[in-house]
Length: 85
Image (cartoon, rainbow, N blue to C red):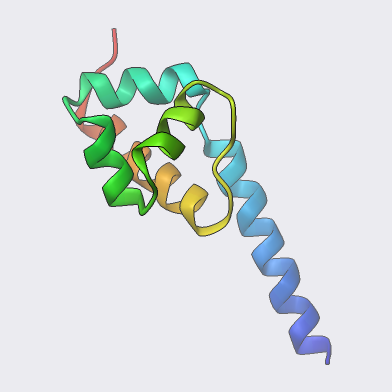
């Protein structure tokens, strides 16, 4: 039973780390645009609809769970490739 609790704590810690790395909606949108990636293409890569990604970029909703993790990782990769100025 103790092993299960440790796994839940590890998942919680990873979720907190990912959340801290999530850029603001405006920064995420600016990064996507600077990279020349369409909203629909990025949404497809993350596994959500274009409407969902637009809601994230407008700050109406925040990505959750596996989609948040995928979104953060993809934005981090894009940020390595693009300079926002």
